[in-house]
Image (cartoon, rainbow, N blue to C red):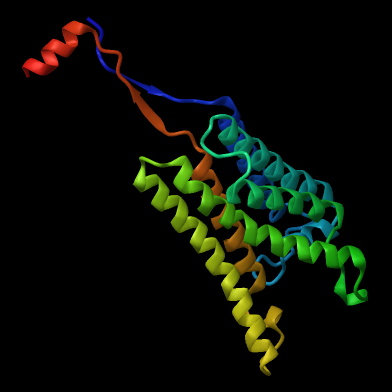
Length: 229
């Protein structure tokens, strides 16, 4: 007689995606303690400030790891039929991933020496990235967790939290436009951006981490025992 067994569904692509995203996040954290970038204020300076230092290559690798992990993660969800190939989630994920690549290709501009085309592209790509990631996760959560309301709720709460942090920046811009001090000084911009990035990546990880599932091969004898009980 066979008995019900609990097995862990461990799709390698999803696990690799989570590892890649986590690796990128850890490299960003590492930049804050390395000598060349440890003096950059995590409260006032944005994450992209690291790209203006000699540790730029670490920043680039970190961002590309996150982009790669996101792409293969959503690709795995599509291959496993959790998501349609063309959906709001897949479109927003594509925009998020492409924006990360543009952030690397067009580094942050040093606005102290004036504007530049590359700096403008970088700024637009950053905004698109921070908005599209939580939207991608939000739309994907229902399809990925159709029978797991708890996982779906946690994932969506994290996505909403990431968007709420972006709302703080929008609020500062509105106040600045109505006579307040410059928006990048009105809030601890670096801290808000890091909180937004962290919350967004946690939402992404929550979506991609494989769930445990129960498989229960049951023989006729086991079925009879189950019925009798």
